[in-house]
Image 1 (tube, rainbow, N blue to C red):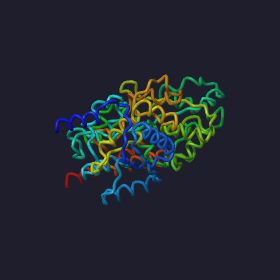
Image 2: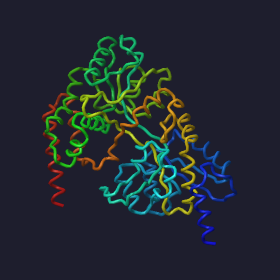
Image 3: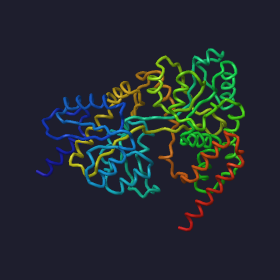
Image 4: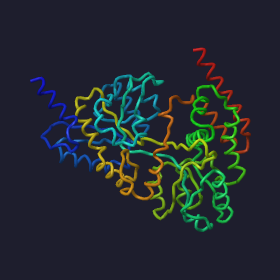
Length: 427
């Protein structure tokens, strides 16, 4: 009898991917914050019920900060749903795992984890010896992916006499093209929401990895390489070079990303730096916008280029749910190529799984072309202290405003780093 039960459970968890319809009174509850996906989720829930007889309810809570508060309160009260997402830094994610709220999915997804774009799973993975002290495993299932790249307006390129199918190949050419666009068309060469400083740090780290390589970059985070190193000064000098070339939007250091997105969508700037979520934004702001995507304009051709990206949104399974088996099976179904393609077409978000590029729209394909070069702080072996990151971001803003030199900023960042290291040694 016991063997028979084991066989039945095994077949239920790891059987064919298309679930067989069954009569069930069980209901899977999912909490999320994604307003743009609620309609698509409901359509998928209806399809799943038709296939399996199991009801799935997606409950939307918005804005994200309200959602996060609800999840935290539910965790304390023991009322988390079967499936939910954790917003915030990986440290927050780790705290939920260590508190016993999130199920380690590694034993359950061995037969279907190969379908994912590798970097999307890494965001939800904790390796042996991780700095958070979390048991090694995979704790979340990505439902889409994202990356952050440079964008250029193809119509403005044509008007300025530039080839609309050939974006800049390196940083020098990027500066050159941006100056041409500004001089000939009287538009801003480059716009970005640098009032939201995480976008500054994103670009700083991408330039740093390109110039010095990831090993030296990580040694800086460890405190082995100072921020006054010539290659770090070179990183900070790139922002001075952009300022001196007069290609930056005048209010770029106070501009939020929504303002930058509107400026680029309406043809007021030739270049921008934004995430793949912009596809949805630009479609709403200007459906006729013609733009292209390209990775970081390299400074060095020796160290390669990395771009921030990975899982966009992920779901986790409540470790204390009575419906764990059903929840896992639903996530397996949700991340099959057919459902992923449906979500991609409905929401214009990049898929989390491998889909043939010929089945992807041209602009999505441009973002997906560089998935082999993704990186993100959540998959790094360590992260910089937030107090140091704050000094970096503020320093770059001051360089752009002409208040500080790259050398002065490098020195201030290094002093902040030394204070943090001293504090950690004394603890």
